Amino acid sequence: MSKINDEVHLAKKCEYWPVDLAEKLLASALPWGPPAYALGIGYIDDPQQTDQSSDFFELAQCVDGAYVCHGGSMGEAWNWANPIINSMKEGGSCAEYTTQDLLDIVFLYSRGERFSDGLIRSAEPILREILREVVRRVHPSPSPMFLK
Image (cartoon, rainbow, N blue to C red; front, side, top):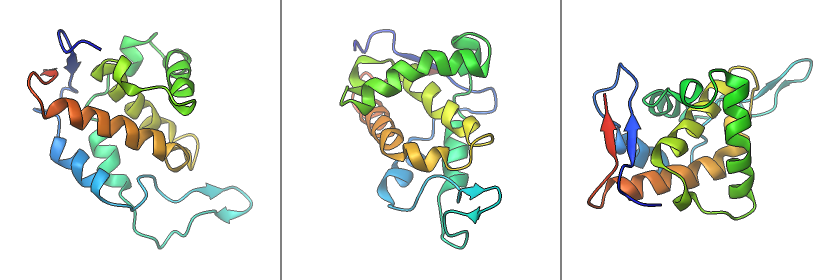
């Protein structure tokens, strides 16, 4: 992926993309998603275990244009994202995708958790790979341009 024109559109409420929060998430082994609850069964994960879900949600909401950029709805955005996610699951590299695309996928998982308990925890290895790549891109020059 070329660094030229690697622009990321921030959510209106964000002044900058919090690389420090991304690094904090990556540095800890604590789960990123909240404990999963299954109707009729109860909690699948220990609800007393500390997690980083509030930090993950805060980070994910900093780039919130996935619906607008990829079809206008959650369903269309997931239709766009699924081939990318499947490619990564099969060993594909994040390097071929724009930073905007990678962060749009992170946003989709944060929103998807509202409808599917355990989604973030089940995808955490891929989400960690995505954030590692974004953090790697932010540090060298030129880094992606984060726009308001």
